[in-house]
Image (cartoon, rainbow, N blue to C red; front, side, top):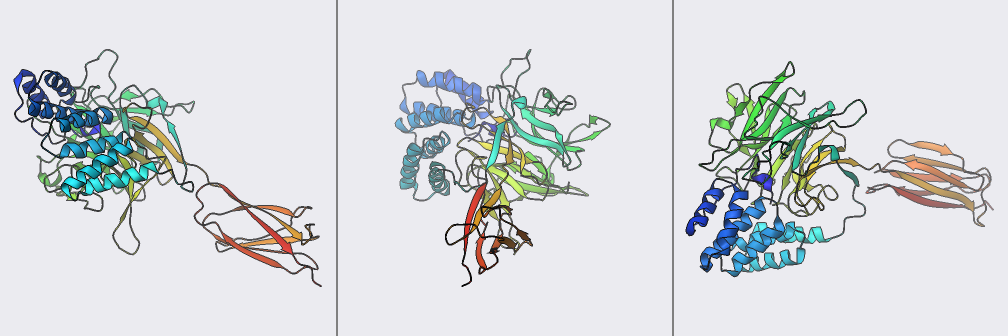
Length: 514
């Protein structure tokens, strides 16, 4: 449910034809839609629909108008257009499913649930609709109070009134240079892209200056294109090779996405060389993500034989070229869209999906591999990283729990912005007191704390019997206390499953020796 399916990567969206469209405006709409000019097609479709009396043609215009809105990331408008198509008896039930998806993306969960249930009554079974229902229930729930808390901040230095997305760091040891994709226009060039209605996408870079601030983003110059759409960069661990997506534009036919690589030497990037998995130059290849080994490349394609709309694939560099594309399978890929892969320094794969159960639109997931060799699990990163908008294009600072990602969450009006995230420090403390049965402090009392992680510490309480300790998370503890003339006392507790800062309390009452 994302216009990034048309920008840069994604002019790779399969174009359905407007069948039986009538009149000059309908023909113009069909031509624009078929070659992926969704912003231009929208204008023709609205005009054609306004003057059309034939209900069948009217339903077609409204359905494809909904498609244009959906691809351009305007779910409210899309849901309305699909609804009108349904009222005019559009013959394909896909309109009902699309409407449900768009209501969910717009966070209108009651209408989404109603549409999903109606669709399931008609078709009987649908993994996409069933996951959509589950996603509505998930998003409608309040966030788990014990979930890990990330501090999310919009990176204003990278922001414009156009879409800015898909950030990456310069290398695995240089986090002071960032590359990202932007659809902003130059001050002197106000021409809009016919696909998205924004500027052509380009790769920009920014770095930390002497004051610790991000510099004004600048477009990469030659050999990166000023006429095509370039974007979604991914760099090798050493920062010397960049993979990126390029969408050449031909106004006479549907366009597709290609991945290129360029090597940096002496401060210049080499002429890009196209990546062609298995020698198949007809395959759409987009959203590259190079693994830490520098040889394995993950990417997105809508190739025939896939599981859903867009799937995650991988290829490996060999002496004879790139190996044939390997689909990552049904645990990761769904009948929806899986896009924007990223491989962390420890080898963990991240991606975004609108087909897995999530909070709305695209959500970010990670693949958790089991130590026992059993099937991997796909884990939703949860809120606040994921939202009811589109969340995608994540990158980490090595293995640290911080980095950058893109989102069209509330307040962005469907425009993508870049956000930083960092795991909020979790502090667990223990506050307690050692007293006698009458509540008075025990003279000469001591407290010893022992943990399975190796802690063995003895402290003396304050004069009033109180004490405080800093604890480790995910650990079992034994707390012992005693005093001259008293029986020792012991309590056990653990700090497992604590994901936010918390203060525990333990009051120990000592019994005197008779």
